[in-house]
Length: 186
Image 1 (cartoon, one colour):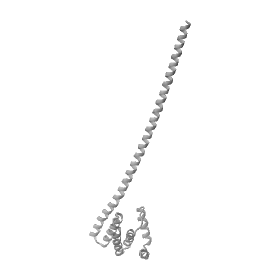
Image 2 (spheres, one colour; image 1 turned 120 degrees about the vertical axis):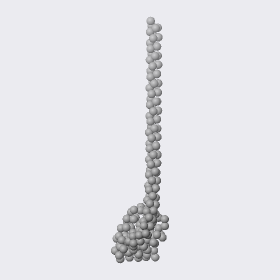
Image 3 (cartoon, one colour; image 1 turned 135 degrees about the vertical axis):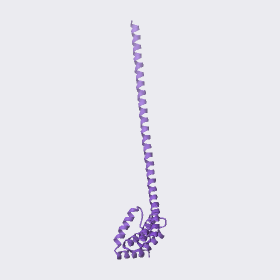
Image 4 (cartoon, one colour; image 1 turned 60 degrees about the vertical axis):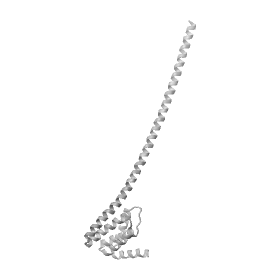
């Protein structure tokens, strides 16, 4: 029955010349919602949008109500549902209901976009923390290299001083030996 229900909807759409529009809407919704699939609620809302564009308001309202029962707490689907209800009620002249639908749409849309913004903010925080740690690691490596270079330089200076002191002692020894030899020959 599940397959035949969808087949019946597709058949009804093709009779009205809406199949291409529905396919385009499906691609548009799926591309705007990465990692999502087309479930019954979103399929009903897409069909309802097609019906509204063709002026089949009764069929559209039935599909929107069905989608409302299936959507649950999905903020994106609820925002889409309230947007369609706003269009539907406006077309039918129910302006008070349309205003309420518009308010519900804004609330659901804000909830959906705030979740996205929180996800983006968390991703940026993670990226910043990662970059900061990478920078800290780079600075520690530079500091370690500078310390190793300082240690090598200190060892080199120590070795040069040791060689200098040894040469000085040798020269003092040679001068002293030369003085001793001169004193013994004189």
